[in-house]
Image (cartoon, rainbow, N blue to C red; front, side, top):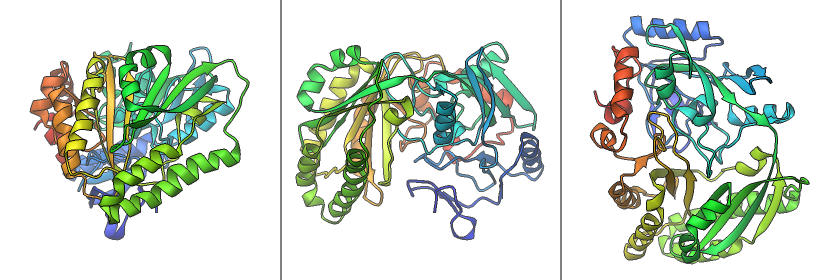
Length: 439
């Protein structure tokens, strides 16, 4: 059952299995007009409204007991403008369908995250990102947006049209309206060479600034309870294409990263004492490899092992210290962490509530296998992240509220003022937005 499917009695559950809701009404509109009519009807009936994508958020950002709008009929490419080099897509289009469709047209996004199950609107509204020295999040590649606002009207925005809405709505948290279409900047498809290589954590931290500066896209995974990491560098390449061989690809991506990893997580969940030994083995099981392919085949990878995740953006200059503190916290604690910690970067952008708004950022993501108690680990990690003025990813587990967020986002008041104007009655409110944006 996909995460977007309803459970029993109309219960909706997210992908991570940690959030559920029972909406009073669910609709899957086939057009923007139908969606606008559903919003107006909900307002008349006193129901709150939320749109949901594939449920890949670990927060209750999409949960509602009112009207739940499902976007699966609002999919596909509306328009490709080759002179402006943009593509306009319906909001419910899954990223994997967008990536494949663009590739057929000889086009590509500049950068993307590593999961492509999400809808374009769900991914951008929560600030989904990959890693990049100059290229930023998916939302930073948006050049235009269409959204249905609380009064049921359709609003379009770009740098030229309603620029104040554009500044905020690219990562709008579902608080400003229901996004119905997104226009992305695209470029001619290109090749990336990926180099994956195990490296001691101490070396990665000592050379981090250099690794960041020398690569267009650098990231690393540190295996807790070990001093080992796996690093990944993606850089543009003149070719030729050298995809991962099918057998090697199946072994590395399906068997090691998903199959064996799933078994290791199940063993670790049942017998936590085995986790450090498993971590040492799995961190050594990966060997160096290089391959060259079109962007979405390099940036993204399948994620079949279900998990729960917390991720914070800290100032890039604070990364090394933050990771060292995280490591010493894990070493001191009795915690048993079977999932690697993922570290990525993004340049500063100009989106009001982007985690990289106005500052060069580094992301640190901590994960736990679904069904494993994660609170103690996440609480201890969050204490470290917030000491560095960390900004939580909007779609991942965190405990921050409006008071904290207003301190770490210089333009926080700009966003809430816009929300007051576009949704004065709080039609799009839910418990999560009340906590993070204030009542």
